Image (cartoon, rainbow, N blue to C red; front, side, top):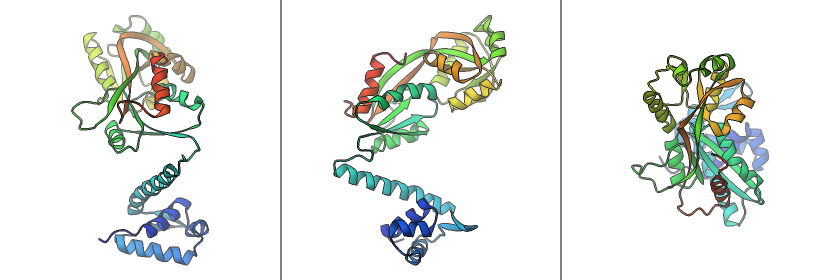
Length: 299
């Protein structure tokens, strides 16, 4: 297949972004007929339809969604490059692109990142949540400035990146209030046979929790494994089982969810790491985050 025509791709991207050929024609100052013709040429070149009729509007086909995801990256990064070369950022200030591993608790993420919004220089915070391996791939090509993870980067991975510990916290076990009251007496032994909501088995904390149960000769009844920790809390609030969170955000959990404390595990620690592509941190917002960590805000 010949090289894609970027002009045709730009027209397609405009139509997909603005939802119609008519609106795209206004933005691009072109006639609808011109844009329609360019789209047909792009579809001929690709060999597949990019849009399908959906009533009076257009809907992306599967191929269209795939092409749009790449086009969106191409033109977004191109616009950012123009800003950087002109000495500007899209917000007139700093931009911080953060990748968040799905297993990192949302309340802890908020506590870590919220200080950058109080920096003297305006910051545009852009957060994406994906599996850690995908985030590290984006970090390696500098699409991200920072990755938050519950474990350090493994030396076995062929990625040039550096770990910055942000802190650690002992663990609190929570459950819906009635269950928490029933299990509080005799904790942690009371967890034996109790319904348990576990983090994803691939997470560092999930493995640590399994070992903690083993050391304490506890066999909970695992009812679900949930990577999204916010979703886990929602299930726990609804009475599905016991769940965990760092003790550093215990007050936040109790304020946000209708749950009670089952008990505390000082010897079960949840850790948080910032992973960057640079050994010496240069980005002011990342420096702000790591400085807050050194002050012990997250322990």
